[in-house]
Length: 225
Image 1 (cartoon, one colour):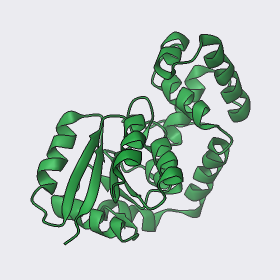
Image 2 (spheres, one colour; image 1 turned 180 degrees about the horizontal axis):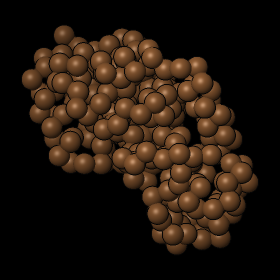
Image 3 (tube, rainbow, N blue to C red; image 1 turned 90 degrees about the vertical axis):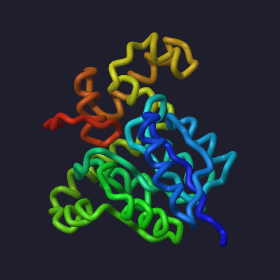
Image 4 (cartoon, rainbow, N blue to C red; image 1 turned 90 degrees about the horizontal axis):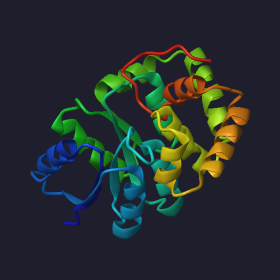
């Protein structure tokens, strides 16, 4: 029997270990690799060609949303199941818009996780039961708000998305430059482009936008834009 190969992508070692041990009990599922940030998830997908990536949203260097977009460009047969501790509409909607076939809460039962992996490998959408109920109740105006956020995000290049994430995580220009391996002046130029494209002209506004668009997670509910 061919096993479903899975790549675990989460920046918390204890979370990856938990999922690995849980999946070891399944005869038809095999964990072939672990990534601790979005860039590593992309690199390991190229190397290992997993059937399914279990992808955390909030990760350093490259968040799960942008990593998903990049993975689906280079490995369109790979399916991505997004993971999050939060079920806010912004996260769920942005995850599916990024190309994820489903969305699992980290509080989801082992049975649901395995079911989600099997459904994802077949190309079927799968959501944690509580998330599925929320999606059914989403109001049209909620989709409209998310649509406006996504339209703005679509203007950004992959590098600008990386810079936006690091800004929202509180990184200074020097730290951002070091993380991305580029010059400080290049970071400043990307920051200028971000502000122009999003029509947001301060760091706090960029951070609020990143949270509302699901680019980074926050346990604090913010009113933005």
